Image 1 (cartoon, helix red, strand yellow):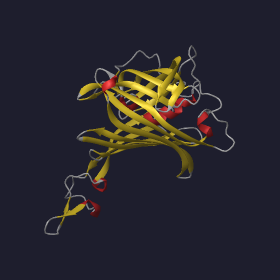
Image 2 (tube, rainbow, N blue to C red):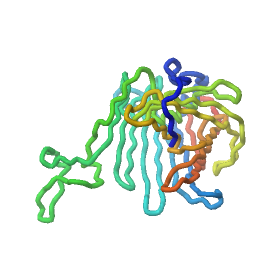
Image 3 (cartoon, one colour):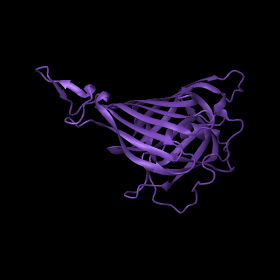
Image 4 (cartoon, rainbow, N blue to C red):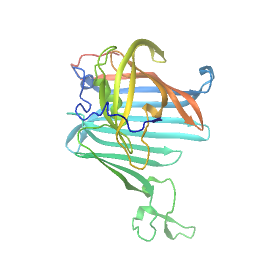
Length: 309
């Protein structure tokens, strides 16, 4: 996690808003389906003594929703540590025409059920969370009823059954112009034509409670070895500064994969696919965590020029 107090407005992205330095042609347009699989490991001290935290699988597809063609980005995280299993699915939907954000949901099913929702609209987005329905005298939803030992129905007071949860509006974000959730931002950033020594590019990222300006730049070229092979990469530097935050607390930016500290980020030079991320995370104590590409498959739109593997 990265903490940023209110900054001098160096990057307040009220003009560019994510369109600056977009590469031509757009590399996402040529993809019909894509799967990227990453391994996640953690260690304290020497990387030689690391332990496995599981996998993260990213997919990109397109479909129709409410009469609109949309790009659908999804990330499935599965793993955890002994005694604390973790399974969560993040799904982001954007307009296929202009990449305008439509919907982002994060649903955790292990260790317990939990769900978050960013519901985008023309003038901002609403942030909602689920909570177990605890209105036994007011709720008349038959799905929320369970049976006592004697067979009589009673309203459930607490469990992990998603059918017993209701959405609660936590915050209304109001702003002009585009913004992306963190998952969509990982894909939309691939449109930026970043080069070492060249200009940076920026986009706005909305987290649960804050809106950030995230600026990316290519620091250098470097060949990186991961389970997927030796891949010529760009090392990407990024900086996040708050545009809009909750007035009652300091803004927190959950970086890529929730990592903080001095995050190292490498992307494939040809495809801009994420290859390697290294940072720190608190799992009780602070651990180094590495996310490495292990496998990738891409189905391209017929006639589209290949951008890499």
